[in-house]
Image 1: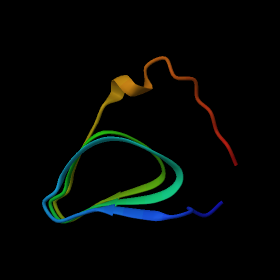
Image 2: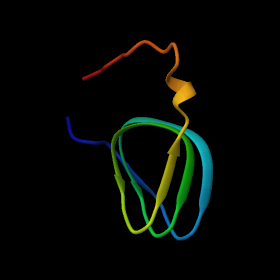
Image 3: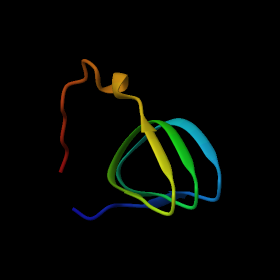
Length: 67
């Protein structure tokens, strides 16, 4: 299944969030910083972007897949 929707974090922004968009494509670029968790179809990191994932969000969560 192809990603549905697309969103981008860009241009020196700092974001702290929990993103739940399991069918979306996400892009982090241009010195953006993301801290949190992202449940997405695909993620691309480029152009000096930094992504810090909070692994505690996954603790105790059963694995679920929808196709």
